[in-house]
Length: 104
Length: 252
Image (cartoon, rainbow over all chains, first blue to last red; front, side):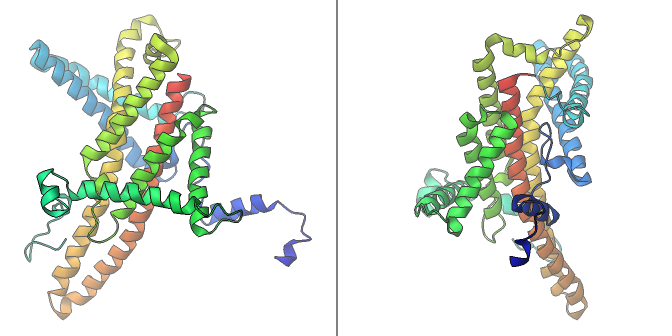
């Protein structure tokens, strides 16, 4: 403690922040458009899988439901599956888009 | 928790619901999952109640934990949502700590992880989804539906893109719930599998002691990993809720 007293270096807050991030105590500072999962490859992989599949699940559910209502059994499901894939890619683009202003 | 027979691993049996609290619980279908939810809620309340009771200038450990919890959530709300985030702080705080305590309680032996059930996480995600949509409609009225029409696109593509945007919007419920549920369930299945390995291998005699020890070591690491996942997934759930709320408040 005492040896730091004369040191006019970075403030205690800064050094604490550096030390904490070095120890992995703080989540790495995330840009506002992304969540904490953006960091590791494992996290990105899980995120990609979940986003793609969930969009597809919703699309299949919509297509199947509409088919049931309108008695057009394979057609609307077939239409909605590629749309669901596109929505999944749109989800991913929203997560990993290079510019930060695009969040919506 | 243990393997059913000598050669089968009952990895999913741990997720079965059983009535808790004896006859009363059985008559109203109060399961151990519900019990753990109550326990988690009470623990959060206890942390805040007993943590803030001393109201000391220099906080003790519990008070420091409570203050840290409050401040980290508050800063997350304000950072992610903007100044309007203060309004949603109670919701995000409750959500985060309910999930966090649910995840963490699940790491203890004989305890049940209620977040490992898709029905629970789906209900939480639906709650978020309905709230976000309600906030967006309240803030922007019918203008909210312009959210589904990206700006600056040719009108020819509009019908296609609107459908894609709607699907993408709806898929938030699935991705939010599946992410939490899958992480918690996968972790507990792995713990169960390696736990069963320990028992099965040590039953093998001296030949199995070394691999059983390896499984034990791996399980120890997995418990640590599970702790990380518990905190991370609760955090991700809360952050994504904040991001969705940001979208609802600011639209685009």
